[in-house]
Length: 407
Image (tube, rainbow, N blue to C red):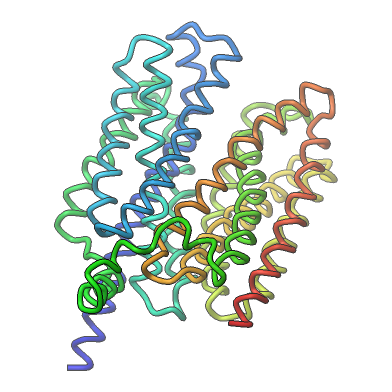
């Protein structure tokens, strides 16, 4: 029976992480979609640069309420159910992007698509975390989250084909893929065993205890300090992540390289990000947590300094790959920490709120970078401004590791 139970648990974990990986691939597609389709959307709707910036922000803004609500509802009614509905919302409004005819309706559907995607992300992290033993959570979240750069890299390749030259095809792809994945989730995705166990215990002990965990529990005596620490780290790390995701090709052009060379750098960034996310996730389980924090933030700093100091195209490609490996990998590790920091009954809520705080940084980062470029600081100024953000994140994560060791 023990062997049979072990095989069942292993199958449960593999299926869960694989399906969550597919949803993360779709998130990666969406992250790249707006930028790749920008030129076609600008022409189709007759937008100026300011309106195009608002279009970019609408999807990211939608992630905030989605992350806040999705994680909370998943703690109440179940991970699987909320993930299916949030994926359906994202798919529907991504397809609607193709069919709208006004700028206001374009913003509305991008916001709602972002809300669906924002609700899905904390559930993906929670499901991947709860599908494995606590000793393997970093690896599981890393394997799941590497789907994001895979999706972004795939869309970059699609964009270079005749199919990808039509902006509507980009959103058809982004909307139809999750519709295909939804039946797979309904059929194959198991509910979290930890959630079912916690729910059963709650029903046995106290019928009301299932709804007693709430947002305020993030700030009780046990969780207050760790909540603040992880929020600050999420905020500043995602600020740098989205500066790189949004501006890397443009920063290349600021440094005198061509648009095509900038796009190639973005591709190297995403490929190395996939590798870095997997390796850092595995190291999270095997090394002391403090060593992983020092490695990944040290790697980001090394990459930023390399970008600032590189003089040839080859050096810039290597620097882009170095930054990608560590900055996206770092985000995967932070998501894994969200699964470690909070108990089962609060995990979806905790990861969801932390993700929402991180998304605020994600919105501010590209805007701050744009202001720095407009003020004449150039690419070097943008890259230099990212360095203190990384140092602050590293310090707060090291404090969090120390706090977890004291418990």
